[in-house]
Length: 122
Image 1 (cartoon, helix red, strand yellow):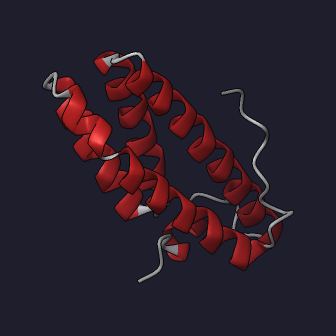
Image 2: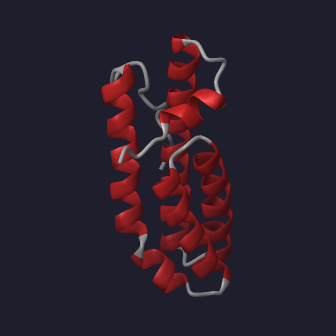
Image 3: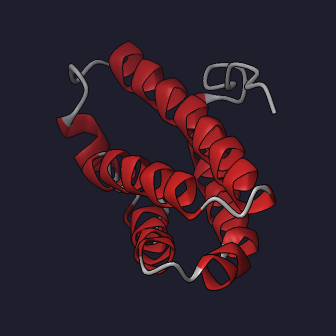
C-alpha cells in the first residue's frame, strides 16, 4: 500500500500535474515543520506543543491521503493530550520513519527537486 493515496491527493489539487506537484511540495514542507515542532515539544517535555502539532498534522495529512501518517499523529495527539508525554515521545522514531516514506513516495512520483522541502529552522 502506498503511503499517500494519490486519488485523495488529486481531490485536493486543481487536478493538473503542476497542481499535484505543488501540493506535494507543500505536504513535504508541512511534514518537516511538524517534525521540528514535535521534536521541540519532546525536548521541552511540552505535551501541549506535541498535542497541537500532532493534531494539525493529522488533519492535513489525513485530508491529503497520507492515512498511516495521519493515524500515527492521532495516536501521538491522544497520548500527549492525556499527559502521557513519554509515551507520545516514544512514537517519534516511528513518526520519522513514516514521514520519510511519505517524502520518498512523493519524490519518486514527482522528482526529488520538485518536492524539496523548504529548509525548516530546528
